[in-house]
Image (tube, rainbow, N blue to C red; front, side, top):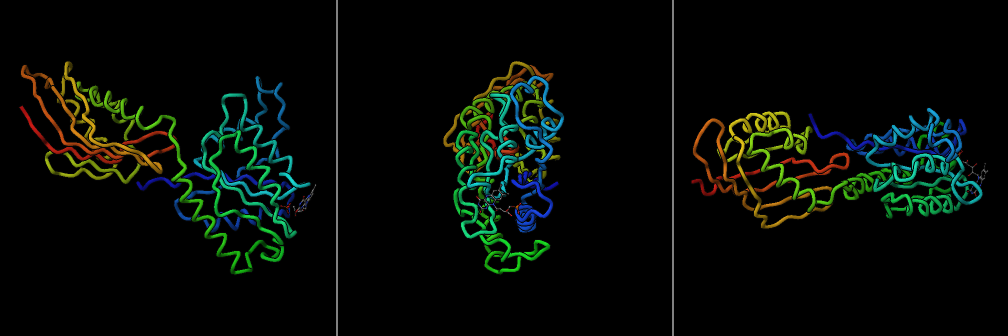
Length: 319
Ligand code: FNR
């Protein structure tokens, strides 16, 4: 199994059948790198946001929120109505941001493309959206900006892009957005807090409990484990099976700690390197085993959670 493409929800600020914005959205989707799985989320059936309905939300709100919840990133493609964004798009952002404290936008990477048959390219709508993104805490890509003006001159009636410069720009934009979706990924837990939890999970592992480790391990490839015996385990399924099996040799009463030499996180990745100290009880045996493993672990953010994707453990001292 390969690493899943990031799920990008595309919100379009026009409901009309022949919408130029929808055509442009489809042109962007067609130019997305394979690591982005883009799909349009429809917003035309959302009842107008009304706080009184929060206790019993209309089914269309519920399914819209479910679709948003599954997204790793959002792409907004919108025309301009009397300078800001059309009401349908404002309504969609309101519905997705409520009830208070449950906003589905918090921290999500996003990008905005505005569209107009006129020369200003929907600049006002583009920036009105960006203004509300400040409060929604959407991590919106700054560059390149996309104001697609005179849009009828760059596509034919079927939405095929007829101008090479526009074609090139749309490709460049989607490539930049792909990079942004990985750079701007955030995890619910900051890396240092996660690392403290990882240390705790390591202690549980050497007491025979594999489940907490499996819960923070990726289920998607690429994933690798280079164990002390020198035989690499490749692939998430095999790594998790090996870890589940190995935990059985440990018994209650083991204790362990991490001596971290270096650690850090950036762009959706995190690592630590150092010594894993363990004073272990082996299941069914009397004697204790003291071990120091020279360890490096690499983690990546998947759907807002840190996941172990690589572990390299060399045998240090064993007593
Ligand atoms: C517009 N239009 C428009 N265009 C623009 O560039 N700036 C604007 O402020 C407005 N204002 C505006 C208000 C309203 C109510 C309508 C209906 C239209 C024109 C608009 O860009 C044009 O109709 C686009 O074709 C709308 O986008 P779709 O529906 O083709 O995606």
